Amino acid sequence: MEYDVIIVGGGPAGLTAGIYTARSLLRTLIIEKAVVGGQIASSFEVENYSGLTEVVSGFELTDTMRKQCEGFGARLISDEFIRFEVIDGGYEVHCENNTFKTKGIILAMGAHPKKLGAKGEDTLASCGVSYCATCDGAFFRDKNVIVVGGGDTALEEALFLTKFAKTVGIVYRRNVLRATKILQDRARQNDKIQLRPETVIEEIKGKDFVESVVFKDVKTGKTFEEPIDGVFMFVGQVPNTETIKGQIPMNEAGYVLTNEKMETPFPGVYVAGDMCVKPLRQVVTAASDGAVAAVQLSKYLESLE
Image (cartoon, rainbow, N blue to C red; front, side, top):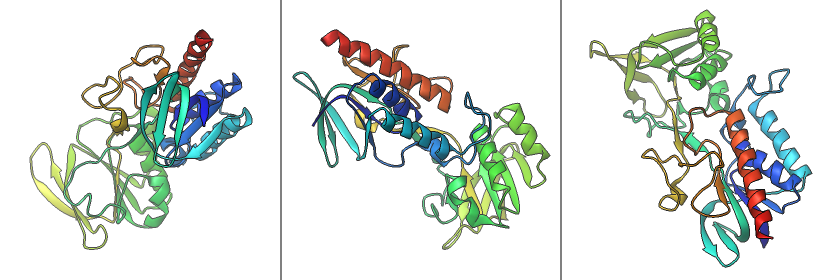
């Protein structure tokens, strides 16, 4: 089947792009391999997106975007993108279960949580080691947990975990937090939260479930072990760009290099969202990228007529 536009990724960047292209009466297909909404769909609260007059969940926000897309006529399917290739008259998009033809592509595959790399992390993944507080927080009612990371996401998730956990330790390598001041203030004012600066995790221990954590003081080099029931990792992201490696220019970390028009070296192929090199990765910047890519692609398609 042929479409005017194929968007790979159903997060805020892809959904916003879909709203713009479908509203322009372009036959639009959005391909998402996991949950529509991307990473933000698992966030318990979103309060800093423009236009919100009350706090909503990430799922609520992105579900509204999805409904807008479908309302304008975009089609959303669940499939896993494998590659795209140049053909006469456009591109062929290969997925695990389908192959489609299109004149234009917007790649918006997003990113996924980065692993810490500590001993025991992989062994105890989903057994007390988690990368999503909203998903797993309720399992740690009256338990002692730690959050690893000092940025906005780490503090947001730590504050959410206080709804369930007995104590929440925030472990970070530096002596200062990187999160915005309002989140730092909220964390310091919460009696359940314990800030643990200049500390790293050496090992996560447990037989069938997390039982303890070996910490290291980065100043003294001393290690010590404490009983811990859960470890939540928020130490950064990894771009989902493996499928286009070698086709689209990237930096050493795998983020796509682009210009202000979100163009790639392939005419009619654009990129958007968290997979791109950018100073800020938020819903609002992802949506902006999606809008820019969609408008530029629309102009490109008009030039073909």
